[in-house]
Length: 201
Image 1 (cartoon, rainbow, N blue to C red):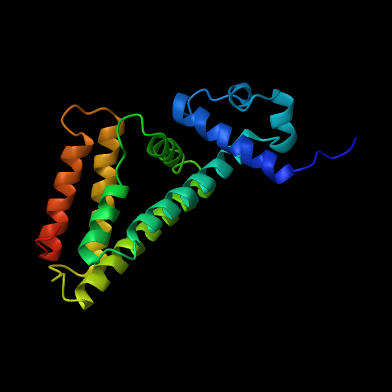
Image 2 (image 1 turned 30 degrees about the horizontal axis):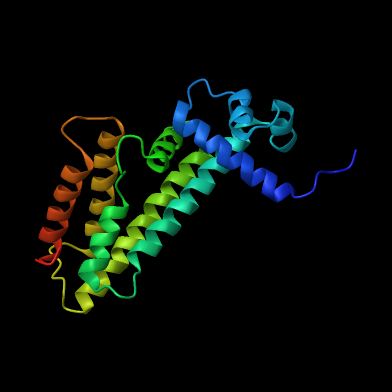
């Protein structure tokens, strides 16, 4: 049998479809046929490229992490903005748009696998470390420019910002009625203002 052409594109399409299925339905009870239906292909086609569902889910997690980080980096690196504007953009990019935000729903679902899978744990840890590095860079640049006067070490401030946005993000996705995006962003920004001493935030 001839090998199908464009295998990379087909794998990418299956990763996208699996990501949508996980974001919509969650990991519990996820089946190959759910992914096949989302992709508009047969279950056999999914199994041809990913004989093991776990391998496909890990590929989805890796893809989701890279896409999310790329988007955050782009928003925080607007060359027209100063340190305060870039930090504001980073803060806004780390929170779900609402309970149905597909990117955050997907990441939270996949992070839930970290306690049972070294691969998923590594991806979750990598995402946290790289988000911390993003904030650390923004804080350091602002401090060097004299815009920020940091109240805590850069590493501590960066880790706390990521942890806060993760915590608020989980409540937003979980539909906590007292934590919507506007409220969470206001609280997160207030914390950043206190940490940086920057009234422009």
